[in-house]
Amino acid sequence: MSGTQTDIPFYMPVGNECRLFELAFRHKLPLLLKGPTGCGKTRFVAHMAARMGRPLHTVSCHDDLTAADLTGRYLLKGGDTIWADGPLTQAVRTGGMCYLDEVVEARKDVTVVLHPLTDDRRILPLDRTGELLDAPDEFMLIVSYNPGYQNVLKQLKPSTRQRFVAIEFDFPPADIERKVVATESGLPEEQVVSLVMLAQKLRAMKGHDLEEGVSTRLLVYCATLINAGLPVREAVQAAMIEPLTDDFDVKKGLDELVVAVFG
Ligand SMILES: Nc1ncnc2c1ncn2[C@@H]1O[C@H](COP(=O)(O)OP(=O)(O)OP(=O)(O)O)[C@@H](O)[C@H]1O
Ligand SMILES: [Mg+2]
Image (cartoon, rainbow, N blue to C red; front, side, top):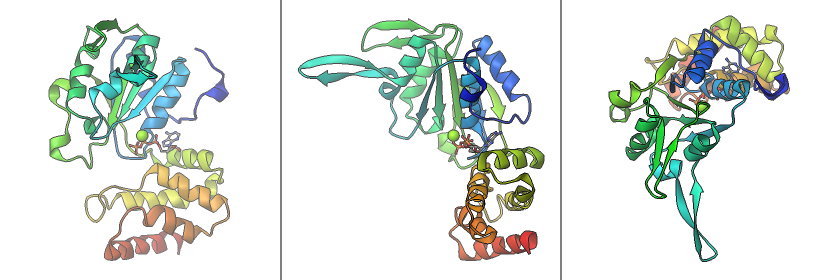
């Protein structure tokens, strides 16, 4: 292990995810993380990459992202054309970790690149340069997505998803979430208790009036605002209610929950 404790981004484990990640890394298995927005997936990967002492190449996938964005392309530089590695190729060459966030958003040709890397071949063919890269033992591919709001067309094909060991993430249980929010925001834990209680009530409305429950990320924002001196009710409105919905009636319903918790 390299790096000191302070180099390692803070992550509080919820279950066996750290052990699973470490085993996947040691045994060269690719990893898929799924879970709602703002529940700690990205932070977990940053934490584990630092713990394993590997450089991390993160790519936020979007619907224009092509295989060449990951592998690399020829660029014109002063009259010459030079090859520039993309983040996936860099990770393969240097034995790093490559994290593809929201992988279901990427274009179809991306899966063609991922398949030979995520079975026992562990190779990355670069058609444009004619190279065939063997991934070193330290290379690891991690992908994540949010199964909630994707439309049906944007699911991973079984032949892709069955190449990964998968971990399901969710919002942490209240005792852990209180510690996470207090640590991240600096707000004393006693003052975080009612915010977490409100979050749990808001999450219970998912699927009824709300598309997604309030995230741990928003709780951290809210606690940060309170710690900076904003009155609690204003912080709750700005960080835990407004980001969730634009619907006037739904907001009124949420306000009732706020009153029930804060009086
Ligand atoms: N277990 C945890 N330990 C430490 N911090 C956490 C934990 N869970 C959530 N957080 C906090 O929540 C914030 C949001 O988490 P993160 O960015 O990892 O979410 P995500 O799951 O990647 O969301 P998205 O799907 O939107 O990318 C982090 O910046 C961190 O402050
Ligand atoms: Mg993320």
